[in-house]
Structure formats: C-alpha cells, structure tokens
Image (cartoon, rainbow, N blue to C red; front, side, top):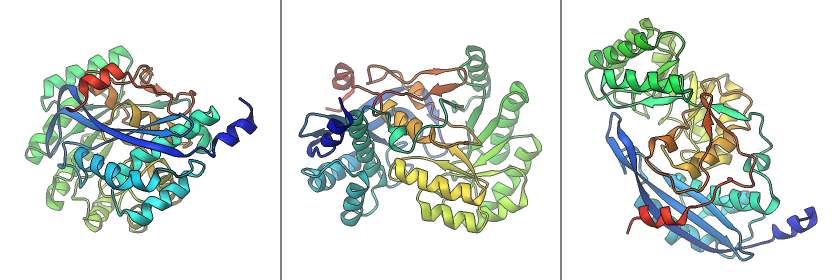
Length: 381
C-alpha cells in the first residue's frame, strides 16, 4: 500500500465500539496489602472502522474497587453508555482530537479512556503499517528489562520462586508486596529473601499505601539498613507532604505510585521533592500520551522512571511496552510481567519474554490478534 493510500485511509471513521469482560485465573494467589488476587478481570475494547479495521484495547484494575475508583463493570458501562456515542462517526485521523472530545464530555474515568486510546492507536498503526512506538515518535529500546513480583506471602515459597526465575533466565530482579502484617514481620520477610538472593538481584518493596508515617519511619530504616533498593508508595496517596519528609530523611528512594498518574500530580510531587521515582502506568494517566507527558515532567525534575502495570493482560501490556520503548532511560526498569501471572492468554501470539526482559514488537499497531475461542471461553456470561 502506498503512502498516499495510507494517508487516505486515515480519513476512515469509527463505525462501532464493542466491549466485553474476560476473567482469567492467576497461576497463584497474588497477595497485596488490600486484597489477594486469584483472578484478573479485564475489559476488552473492540473499535471497528467503516473501512473494516479493528483496533483492540484493554483496561483492568486490581481486585475490583480495592485499588481505586474504577471497576471492570464500571469501565464497561462508561465506554458503552458514554464514550461510544461520542466517538461513533468520528474520524480516526487525530487521536488527540478524540481525547479532547472525551475530556470535554466525561470527567475522570482514566482507565476506561486509556483502553479506548489504545484501540485508536492500534487502528492507526494497522492502517499505516507501523508499530505504535513509531506513532509516538519512535522506539529507542528494543528490549525492556522486567522484574518479577513475589507475592505469595510465604518466605520460603518466594525464595524458591525467585531462584527458579533466575535459573530460567526470565527474571533476576524482584519486588515484594508487603503491608498486610506488622512492620517488623514484613521487614523480616523481605530481609530473608534479600539475604537468600544476594547483591546480584535488585529487591524492592511495595507497601501499597498500608503504612502510617510512624510505621514508615520504622520500616524504611530497617529496609535501608538491609540494603533494599526502593520502597514503593509507603503512605496513603494523598499524603505527599509526609512522603516528602520521608524522602528527605532516608537514602532509600521512594517510588510514587498511587500518588501520581496525571501530569499535574507529577508536578505537585516534583516541586516538593516528594519522591525520587515515578511509577508510570498508562491506565492511571488515561493512555500512552498521558503517561509520556508524566515521564517528561519526571525527566525535567531529575526523577527516575519505573514502568508499572495494573496487572493487565497482553493487550494493555503490549501498549505499555510500545510507550515505554520510546523513553531513553527507565532507571528502575519495568514490572511488565503480568501476562506471565495469568494461567492463559486470549491473544494468538503473546509477548516474547527472555533474557530477563520483554521484546519490543515491530508489528503494525499493537501486534496483537485475539484468539476468539479463548475469548469466548473466558468471557463473562
């Protein structure tokens, strides 16, 4: 297809938007401070153009409403009842124009908007026969490092799991989910794992907002003394002033997660030195464009970057890979492991994980196609 023909096709319009929810079991219980996940529920978005091009998107959260204000059921309703009527009949030539249209008519709902934006980028990539990374300015990384999250809650099981990952060449760095037990118990769990793995593996912890400031002072001192590399979101997301006090007090860096997603949130944390790293998540930022805008604020402020996940499936993870590959540096790597946490997949060709990372696809759009038999099997009836 010639470039002129491709440009002509960008005048294509949105004909139909469909959504469905799939429920995929995890390979083991994934324990966080607020819940234990045994199933991940994702909203799958299909956007069809009048010219017959299909774009895919995905949105998921952690444990229904236990993580934040959006749920799979709510996201599906928002897209079906509010977003779809706004977009049907509109040109797919300008994704930014469609995002403005959504923003002017629908407040918040960033996870749902993220799934729709992903599908629109998938359409444009397929029409122009380029990966999404090209539409975002071009990739500068062919492979992203990926850590593994140890979240069984059992010290010996976590050590065994980590050593198996290292031996297989799949992951060498690890994050531990803590915050459900008393501070000293959680820290003892972390220190035992760090001791077993040694200095060759980076070990970080995610508290998921579970500590008070007093508990964080105790816990971070112990973690710093043990050589732990990073502490993710020790305090409630709105306590950024207290987070700044902790960041000034300790050498161990704080990774802001729940407290940062939108660019203005990143600016507010940066101006008070409230964290030394930001967890990027396309869902929290309303899409790939938003997450890259947040990354620019972090880079301008000298704040490190970490490629996060909402434990989505392959579609949303592929979108994150495409976006993060355009960043020259991810100082803290990524945690784009979540398709590997699921027992099955609904795409025909999954992402490729090896050599402690994930490959960045050069296929058009997301480079993903649905396995409709699997979709029908896991689709919520």
